[in-house]
Length: 204
Length: 130
Image 1 (cartoon, rainbow over the protein chains, first blue to last red):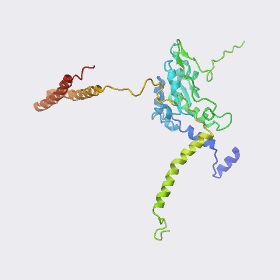
Image 2: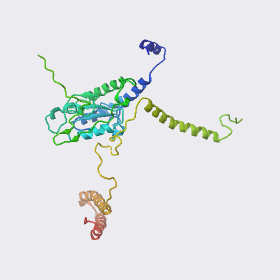
Image 3: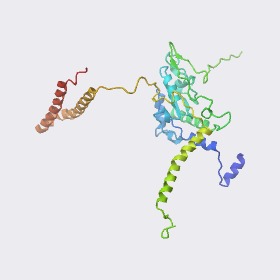
Image 4: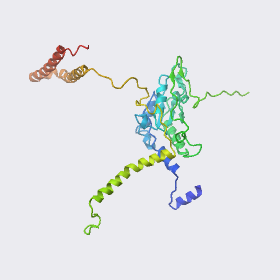
């Protein structure tokens, strides 16, 4: 519907909407995170959900202890290689539509422990991350900002067409391969479908 | 129509029938709508991980039908009793100097009863783990 006509109708007290808008509006305001903390970022995540920062304002106060009931995985903390298969499996066990916020320097890149032999250099190597938040740890405001960014992303998702998100597309996978413990590293060391090593471009 | 009250139908069971139909629809229609939504827009994507029974990220190992030795039950009960006893012993020890003879005797009887039980269990061989 034309935007002008729509605002004209609104002035007359007639509100119009589409199925897509109602669907996205409902989803973005009831994102239930998985109660799942890996390291110190989890403390900030807990603070965000409590009264002072009050994530409940965004409809996300219901931290679910089971992946079956969760929509959002906040990867809050260092992902060790020992833990990575479990993180991926938990993500696989969440029903679609599901989203991931990688919270903090560790979850997005390995952070200060990047040189550690046992630290995964970013959870986006195995699962598709929707919002990355830098910080060590990010303040609750940063997590809320990430959450609002995610809400904006959900709001813009299409219900039909080729650009529709993964959960509406039958051809796209809902489960991602769980890495195995190899001799020296996780096998495979990344999922090429969701992550490729950044290519270095030198100028001059 | 009932002449006295137009809201009450002639057959009293009609209300129950209407109520039964309405309540069934109330339950079934949202389920059907969800099904229709899944069919039209949101395809179901089951998988081995998603259908796994255990949901803590770890793969379950072995069988859930594990047998516990029934001896463990007695062991657990005895542990529980003496666990509770320590809770009583602590305030007893703190207030010991101010206690009357009667209170002391009562506490000793309480201890004796529990120790008796321990002696019985010991003789029965519960404490030796075979």
